[in-house]
Every structure is written in C-alpha cells, then in structure tokens.
Length: 301
Image (cartoon, rainbow, N blue to C red; front, side, top):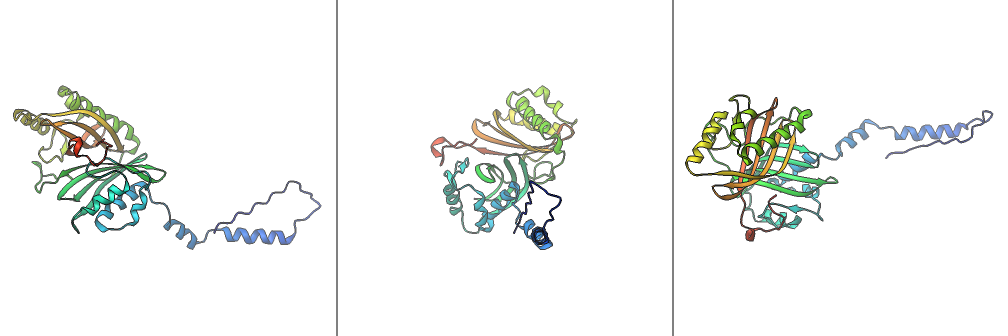
C-alpha cells in the first residue's frame, strides 16, 4: 500500500518547536511508504504487458486454449477485417469454434510495434498449413481492430532454398523507421503500382537481395527473371493501391490491393531494409472473396 504524507506549514514561528510526536508519526508513515524488495518484486510482476506482448499472448491462445488473453480485446468495439469472420468479439469466438479440435498451431516468428499498431508474421496450422500476417490496432491498451492475410504454406523451399518464414527476426535501426517506411512505400508505388521497371535497380544494393516468396529466387536478377517468366505465361501481377504502411526499425510491412492473373488479391509485403536499400522480402497473397461471401461489412482493408 502507498502512503503519502504531506506537511504543509504556512506560518512558521521560530519560537515554536514541532512536537516530537509529530516527527515520530511522520517518520513512521514515510518508513511504511518506502518500497521493500518484496513490494518492488510484486509491482514488477504485475506490470502491464506491452501491446506486442498482448498480441503474442492472444495469438498463442488460439493453440493453447487459454482464455485470459481475450481480456485484451475491447468487448464493446472489435472491428474485424478477416472476411471469413463475423464482426465483433462474438465473431472471433465463432471462428475459433469452427476449428477442428486440437488442429490449430501458432508460432509467432516476428512481431513489431508501430504506434497503436502491432503486426506479426506467424506460422499457422489453421485449416491447413499457412503463413499469416496479422495487424492489430489498440485504443487505451485494448485491441479494437484486426486485419490479416493468409497464404497456404508449401512444403518445399523456394529456388534459393528459403522458406516463407526463415531469416532475420531482430529489429535494428529504429532511428530510421520513418525513412525505411518511406522507402518501402516508394518502392511499391514506383515499381508495383506504376510499373516503372526502369527504376528497379535504384532500390537495391547491386544484385544483393534475399527472397522468401515460394516461387522467386534470390538476387535482383532472379526477381527480374521471375517477373519476365510470369509475363510470358500471361500472368499479370498488378498492384492498384497501397492501403497501409507499418514499420519498426529495419522492417516495414506494406499492405496493398490489386490483381494477380485477373483475380482480386490482397498483397502483404514485408521488407527488411539495410543502409537505405531493400535487402530482403517476405510476402503473403490472399484472394479477396466476392462481397456476397463476406461475413462482415468492414472490407479487407
């Protein structure tokens, strides 16, 4: 228990002596208010978890069945953008009920925080093997909004031996978060939205580039070859609009809308930046269903 003792003397007469009893009482109360090792330990153990920690606990609870992290969701305001789930906390619960028993596994591989947003990159067993990005928005310490993008996880590695989830996880370069976000947004808008392929090389350090897309090899030349092969097969990938850019340090997530082979898609691209250049890339691509199939009216973005 905390105690505060305030001694306010408006008029002090030097001829009057503060009674010894008053000093004794003050000493007693101040001693009681001083933290002990035991109380300090109790306070540290009850500290409010960070928003990132809350999200990780919530995602892991999908596998463990722990109900405590549900308290991190605002029960009166939970805006759902997963179009397979109804809006609100009830919709989240109904989605979990539809999962086959003991079928779900969740491993959060990367977690980042950008202001009121937390975004994660996870390995899922969720109606089959998947890789997913989740984005949560907080208000007053509670989750009030959620977006995600899931893609089937192939068993094999890509042409360069990389998976959709391996690679660096440590956040660095936090002082340059804003610059890295601006670089990622410029790259997506310039190359993928506007199609200015003649400017592609300017975003990379020579041919150095690590790629985790299942069908694309490393190096800038590998990316160019993959895009050329898609064009020969008549598969057109077109980004139409960037909806959101989130970042922490050297990692930036760009959320976009477009088409792949004429099918409406949501593109989530995670970039790792290094010395002002794009160094590494992970992504998920998910089909956006027709509106009549949506279970909420909030839209994918």
